[in-house]
Length: 375
Image 1 (cartoon, helix red, strand yellow):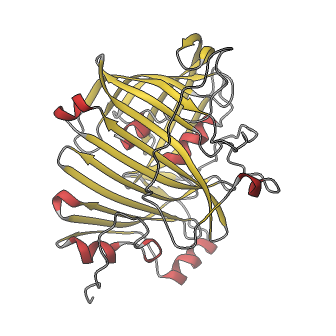
Image 2 (cartoon, one colour):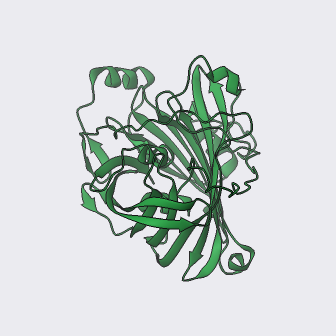
């Protein structure tokens, strides 16, 4: 659910918004982040004072959270949330730990349960994703996915475990010159200098392919929002491309605040589910609450940034580009090249051995360690 919405209607995710109207309090948003899916030895949690000497380029504060109510043809379905849970330091990098959840409500769960949780580590100085982990539960199906971005080799390592099917897929994919994950793309889009008539496109990795997320900025409207109050809004039309061709994955309109940092306010449209390819129409997503920052965390200065250029072409979602010599040397030194494989059988030993060496047993929910089978 998170990935489907993020791909087709990626702008309907949170953080930072303008102050409420005079006399209107901010909506209460309780934290629900621990326990984390992503963890690692040596992680150091940072405090506000540790940013004073070297401010981060990531202009979103720890504790920033927005909630969205989701409805389908007027029926309440559930709630979406994304929160900047903490700021950490690991192996010399400063990372924002972002958590997203999507859950159906008690009534709709009787028809079709959705309980998704996805997390990302975003480098707050270089503004790119380092690692993600996602646990999805859709009815009786449960899937675990870990994604690791290696920016020295421009390769992304993916391990997907379909627990209900006793199957693992492992892949090492070429990123091309640059790409966004669905997480950092959400923030990058809100950092664009959005204005009527602007068109922007970002390359995004999702589901083992590279897509182009294209956004056209349309008209302006005045809104009276229950959370933000009276506000000037821009209406955006997002759609995704594969190999430069529009995909029939979703369509609609997204309202964001015209003033930076362009807070997503509402969405109206439809999308297709990633796995079942079912068209879900009559979708409404409405801002239900937000918190600007956790107590003690100052609001960082906001600066707009253009999208990073991505000159490579793609074929079947894979990049077509001339690999630079330093990148080719890094790949050769580590013995890495793009590849895919599927493994069926007992999950405990195979999942552990399929994961990239640097990411094994990072998450708290992985299966117990078991010796890898001999090759």
